[in-house]
Image (cartoon, rainbow, N blue to C red; front, side):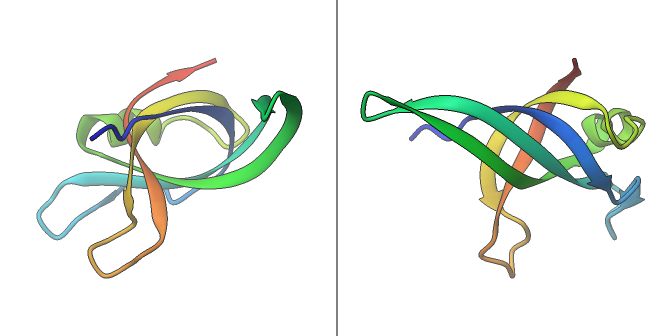
Length: 97
């Protein structure tokens, strides 16, 4: 089954680089997204805030991006944590734009 997300936006907030109990680097952030999409043949303005999380080397690099930076994220949707039902974008790659 497909589960791929590509999203651009502005970093609104970041947790800063942290480490899991297993020692894996992680960073959480909130991203503001705005775009125009086509729905049912009509344009629709999309404005939302999205939670994202990255691990490992991606987290180390992404954590250096300051709040206010424009980024393009690639990843997949999953729960924020095993005990949560909230959806979060798990970032596998990114680019500053």
